[in-house]
Amino acid sequence: FEVEYHDTIPSTNDRARELADEGREDVVVLADEQTGGRGRLDRAWTAPSGGIWLSILLRPTVPPADAPAFTLAAAVATTRAAREAGVDAAIKWPNDVLVADGDGGQRKLTGILTEMEGEADRVSWVVVGIGINANVDAADLVDGATSLRAENGDVNRRVFTQRVLEEFHELRSNLDSVVPAWRDLADTLGRRVRVDTPGGEVVGEAVDIEFPGTLVVETDDGTVRVSAGDCEHLR
Ligand code: BTN
Image: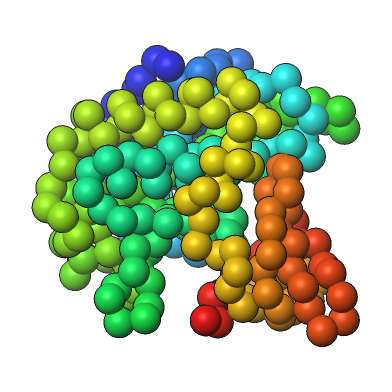
């Protein structure tokens, strides 16, 4: 990847989308601070100086339906890098990287926002935005968030980012490897969950995940497959 670095920028995802419009590919936009960071579901994303805020612009030759696999790959890559850095992170479906707070709860270390444009049969571009709360104080983040600093001290951001990009590159080169890798690092499977989906609420036990990132939930009314939504761990 070619890396474009900014000390401060509104949003690395917005910048990567601009580069997509210019016809670029395999570019990573990286920033120390974002002033207009965006999260899923139109939420804002707090991104103070000291974090790792990055967006990867790709032009993969896959159908749009496979795109969720890139989001999962980003979660796997980040979780592996966090574990190497001594932080016991795990993935909550589909793509939040969480750390147990020691009190039965979980705090969010990383969020991922994937955006794409495509035609019916082929993706035109994908932007995978990864926000890693790295060398920042948890007090400067939203409630329920944690940081690498808070968990195990500051990291070398250059080395950490490199690890994430290496892992991501390997996974995206073999998309079939993503789901098994995700399963190994997931915290959602086996739990009772409530998923807010565009089609309504699904409550039950999360039993598996299927390519490209579909959650399989056993509910009182039978097996339900969920491809998108906001997931809450009930226990
Ligand atoms: C979420 O959990 O809601 C997703 C958060 C995604 C944040 C990252 S930070 C880098 C990239 N640029 C953005 O504006 N958002 C993503």
